[in-house]
Length: 34
Image 1 (cartoon, helix red, strand yellow):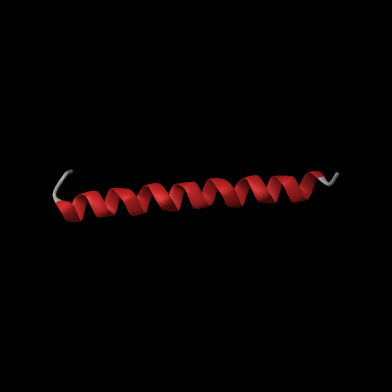
Image 2: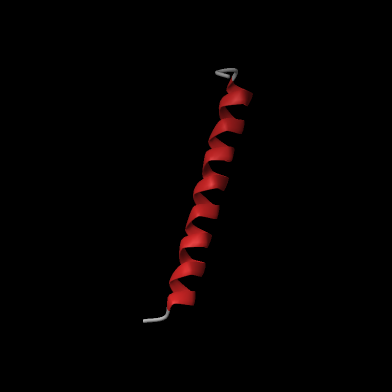
């Protein structure tokens, strides 16, 4: 079990979640919901 690998995986996952949230927010702005 490698700690560094899991840390990178968690970092990548949180980055993807952040990108997804930003994309949803942008889509809502374009739709005029925000």
